[in-house]
Length: 433
Image (cartoon, rainbow, N blue to C red; front, top):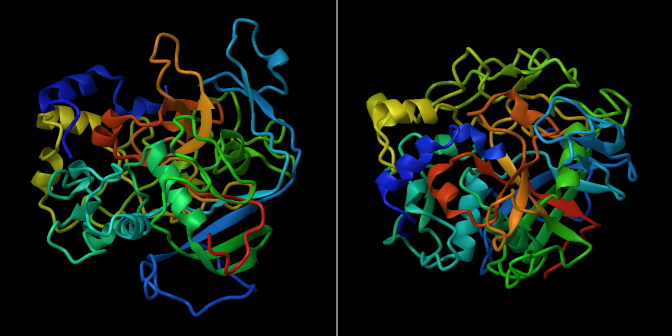
């Protein structure tokens, strides 16, 4: 695949941005329902797609109240009528009228590679699911996935280094996220295990992925694709995402909403009650300061961003080689934070999810109007969660980010765009779609 613009143009555009941080201007399982013999992650049953396991957190309290937010401000309101009169863009968010599930963790690189090899066994990439920017040769510090045109059928894509397998996939756009959800929806549910950890409920699904990506939960023949079924795997909506991250059914926080997905915090205090930033092993990306709770992978002011580079790569190569053509100083200034191993912060949301604060920002399927003066023909979607390269404000419930669903520019330049899967309705074991 070719870049959308030259390296020099990409470099100028990046430097012109307000930094790359400005995009947003597992528990033990118990009990089971009918299960099949366990398959290792990424393995493939005879004649089928690869198999992955997705664990979700149960989100209850249907009909919970929404809360008012003014984008990127340090407050929540019981209703938008209570917001400052000068704030005409207040939104009511977080109210959901039904029980649902949301991924306990972000989709990992290992899971994404299993998906790529299932849906593109010949390595032709007719759906734009991979770019050379994602390779370890093009981008030594951030390249997660390598492509080999000479590899056997169904093995063209591989995890660049073993250390990347349990990191969030970081090069998603909404269309990629929707195709992943469709592959799960159209796949075969091999097993479903429900369990709990304290007050949190979890469900673990083992799914044989399907090569069918263009329809299922989302009809991608329609630019403004929305959910077409009332049961199955989904990309969470903005309200589903916010409720899972911030709504406390026990009444903690302000109007029952936390300031951060890791802890209640205090609205109006800036970053005084923000979680501690992670410190990462410099060659593996594992979290090394897990005892400092609450904890999230983000860039705290006055402290180094959480960062690592595969130990197989020379440090000078990590700090200078990039696919955008940035000089070392500009590269060091714009690209600081790295994605950490999923779930290692151990700081849970009110519903038991991990990493909804920091690490990778995550797509939702909520369609929104574009910013004033921006392209109204393209379809824009909401994103949430902050990134390891940005400060604490991007973890607030008011950080209602938005981007075009097919932003090719960010595909090439933004290695912190992730996916978290949701489930609506009741999925039955053995259902082939």
